[in-house]
Image (cartoon, rainbow, N blue to C red):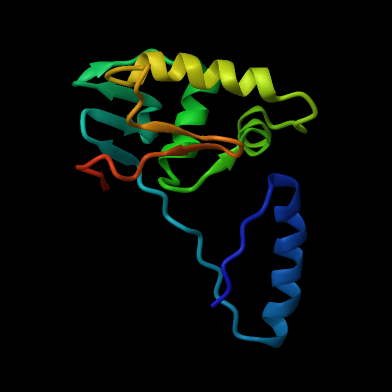
Length: 142
């Protein structure tokens, strides 16, 4: 089994390669199913509704805050550099991403963390980047 991920512009090339290889080999393409709801203690991310709830109350997030949260929460425990977050969320190269990502993380923590000065969900990995804390109990996905 081979698992591959692509940027949007690379997917067309992959589809062409699959169609060529399918004629020669038995290949089955499976699209991963991403959970539509992510639960973390008092935080609930309803991806199918593009909503975030904290203590069962709506949290109003900007597009960049929401997309950053979904990126991190969909990959708990994985450390993302600021450049990786910027490229994934802003959909552009990360020439000068530092302040943009830092500001979004700061604002996001103020909105979702019980105590933004001592975050439990979005952790800073000094010198590397950020990760969503997989150690917050009650992590369930549907």
